[in-house]
Image (tube, rainbow, N blue to C red; front, side, top):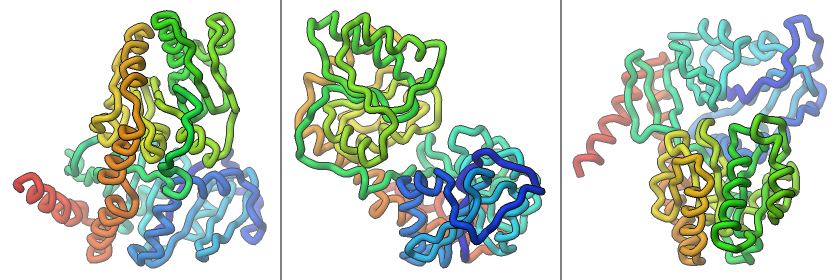
Length: 375
């Protein structure tokens, strides 16, 4: 059983766009993929023989070509889905991240013939009706939906080599996000909250805000607010994931105050580093984030109210709390102890049902889930 992972689309070309599949790809997503928890998970699935082989595909006219990983896994970057489809075999299991319009007609032709697995990644493509399994990281528990698709409770993985717990120094009071800086991620609200905190409690928090800045209705005023309120906010820019992890380990509190998205990886990665997390809009985050007793839920846009919750979090901070955050994450969402056993159960069910049958896979999980709930 081979798993084909459709990673992303980035500047797609046309079906007539030339490319050389033997050329080494210079696409930036080839590098970024290797820092992803999903990539680590997929490699471990191959190592453990949960799947027999793995192929990774990217649709992009920027740096097309191929890349061979150390374990022999091949990745192809082609300018159009039609060229990638040449590598897909009729008995492959297709795991789609996001889903793009150019992929639709190719995927729908596979319905009933090949397993179609989706992680929507905030694209809204879970609305397409032909999926057999939807990796749902926002809900609790597994279920079948009204359209006969198995909603698999997916624990989004973090890269355990990059993001890990330690007993080092804590340089920063607050880490404000860990991604692109724009309105949806909510860094602008984090800045206003820090300003409200400083005024309310007569302190100047030492903050850090990694990420590349984009324009936005609110984000346009971030620099002005930092200057006007005389905030201490270090801005290292867009740094590698290893640097992000180090910043998280050096912070007493990680905040994500965006109101949208789908299970932003920042809070998960911070928890893997042992850093307590403060979030807004809990329904946009995984249960492991908002169920953690050491984390803070702040479902408001009022900076003064947010500052009060931030004050509670910073006063309660301790190294023991940090250890408990890490232990909670490991018990509920670690790749080795939680995610890989569930992926093994899922792909074993797929292996014995080579013809897609969502009901058969659902029975494997729902019966197990009912037994657990009855204990």
